[in-house]
Length: 270
Image (tube, rainbow, N blue to C red; front, side, top):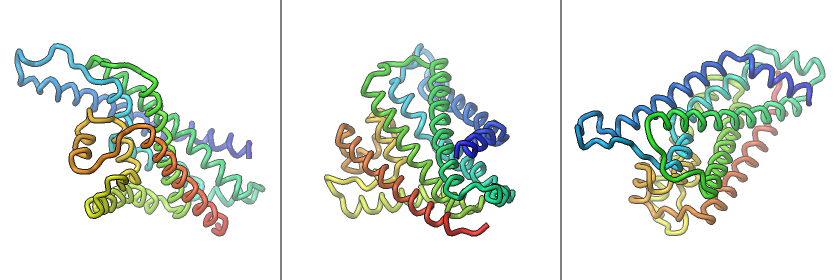
């Protein structure tokens, strides 16, 4: 198991797709920070009424680093390309022939997936805060409450990575894996919105089952997307109950996708 893990990490750091994804990630962080600066400065159309210093809540900048579509698209595409590299090249047959068990290969890839996703998320947050600091001044700070929601968001991103990994290992085909992971989130979001509109429950918001929406909700009322959610639905209070609810949802997702993909992977022939 340890030798397989070392091999998987070696493949990651020699992967050209990693360099491409990190470069795109940095470029998108810069563009987001610059576009936010242009937006709040009025595109230069406000004249003397434009603020000399643009101020944005630190919480919104930090937690907002995990709310863009590009963040999830890059993650899902990279995980598909990297995890399926051995399957598309046929290297998986050589690994099994050398005595590597299917279980060891599966869990080694999953562990590396989680480590890479964690590093990807932290680097994204760092470059987002860094570029934002160039164009604007932060209000508030890194409080314990912000830290709690930041940890919750990271856990939800790791859960999404598990969902991506589950479909990747279920299909073991590059194109279907990417298509499913890119399209499924939108489909689930639409279904959850329809259910919320029909049920109109005061105690349960089904959109929290769509993890990307739940991550957006942790921003509070300062973002446009959060304000829209609060205006349309009975958005639950973003506090301890919400955090506990999302932890339970994430654990269920992880258990479900790991169990199903693991059992299917054991029966596949190469």
